[in-house]
Image (cartoon, rainbow, N blue to C red; front, side):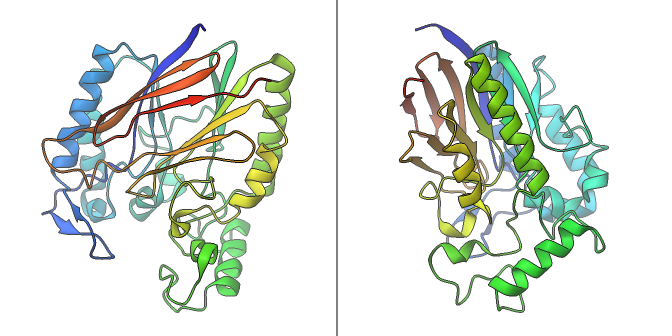
Length: 308
């Protein structure tokens, strides 16, 4: 089957000029300074592999870098400066720890061609990508008075009894996703996604969705799922043209082939990969499958598509 496109993918770099430290659950060591070195390795391999574009799946800089956010962000962009291909950036919770949505739209990691953070692009006539915004409904990046902030505040109040809304204490199962470092997709965005899927179906295109927060129910730990992942899946499952999703956020990564044949790939974090070990992927998409060539700590996958 014909090759449609080749791209590079990386997530959760979370660089900061900080000493190594344990994560918030005291389970994994984070290598804040070395993360930028691994990003440079990623850029070199993307150039060597002649990728057609790059997916940067969010949490590019860490919340610890807030005081030096602009310089930190520029240092990361410098690592990618050798690339002459489009770079599609999604935003994660750590971007919003450092910037507001309005401020982020003025930075180099605003890759949307419109005022919304969700958009689509077509690297091949038979393939379309949808970049979704999982913090559309959120207390992060939004300001009090915005309807999206009010909806998110009410949802967290109803579903998470803890005073500290980043805490999942007492929450069980998939209810653990109702924490403040997650978010959801709003009605207007869901309607827009459906319109894109209808168009892709008409054109006979395969569709891949990408964003920071996972939507595959069993692709990650429940605490990392988008708030309304089930609503999003209900939409995607009505369109057999959807073949895969890519996300980050869960630093250990994960994979699920769901009941409708969608491959949900959650890429592991650069930040938690030991120094000297890269963590990124070069992905080739064919008419009948996608092949993830994992480098270093990144797993490899071959994901076959169902016929449409």
